[in-house]
Picture 1 (tube, rainbow, N blue to C red):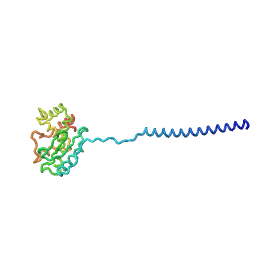
Picture 2: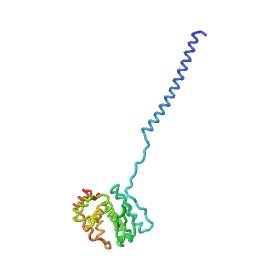
Picture 3: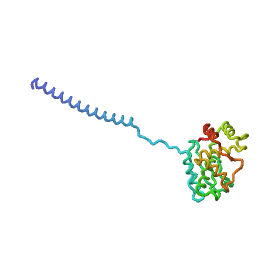
Picture 4: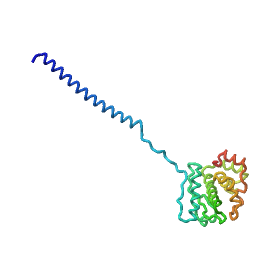
Length: 227
């Protein structure tokens, strides 16, 4: 075989080798680009998650007893509407009158109890208003305990004309009544329905006059009630 033929064959084998190397390198580069692209896609587009939800009111299940059930449905509806503050999570349950000693309700041990046995004169819309306004009254006690400072209580007493101690002067009950008036969504009907309805007794030391427009403006502006 002549030297010329050997040179030709050598060049041919060299070209074939270069072609094979180029083909393999291209395939590897393509695989690398695909992997990189997939990785980039997964890192730049994280999976979306639903935002957390916050429950501000604990609702008591509806009881089987029809008297308690009627009351609890009204109370739960009201609590679902009145979201005053994220840290005021106060469960409210309806109970029979005997459990409360005949009282309309109480705020006690971090929960609210509402008397489900309103007077017989409370019928229809008036009955619903009674449950709602009493619930708002007890929420006023809960807000007082959770939020009011000593200086805020003193300011409220000055606005409403009370002197002495927050509790013995009964300013505490006046505050809960005004809270109910301003926050229950019932307007002036709240206190009127309490004081003007036969069969509904009320301590004479408690609120007998609606707050004046000037008092309401100051109470709300100074955040004494979250209105």
